[in-house]
Amino acid sequence: MKKKSGNQKLDLTVLICQTDCKVGKTVENIKRWAKKLEKYSEKDEIDIVMFPEMAFSGYVFDSLAEISPCLEVMGKGINF
Image (cartoon, rainbow, N blue to C red; front, side, top):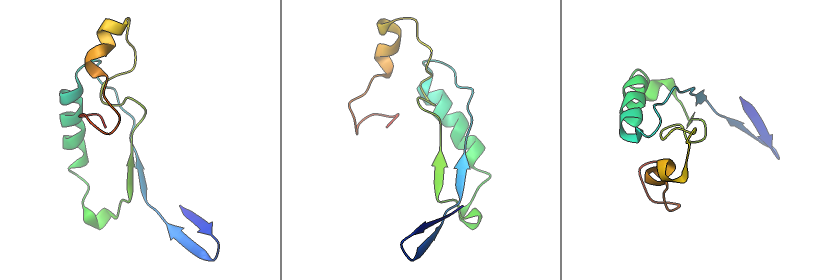
């Protein structure tokens, strides 16, 4: 992907990931993705790895009580 900013060209390689996370299993989901990403290395020259919103905690919750363990303060926590 090339994006022009003024006279400067920016070449980026973006890896876009689709997930099938298990709701409320944040640590397990992160470990599963870490394993999948092991096949990539610096020679792949990936600049950005992009996941969907709430990719690790899940996003379909039935109640506030169910989602509460996944809530974090901005800038802190395993999902951030």
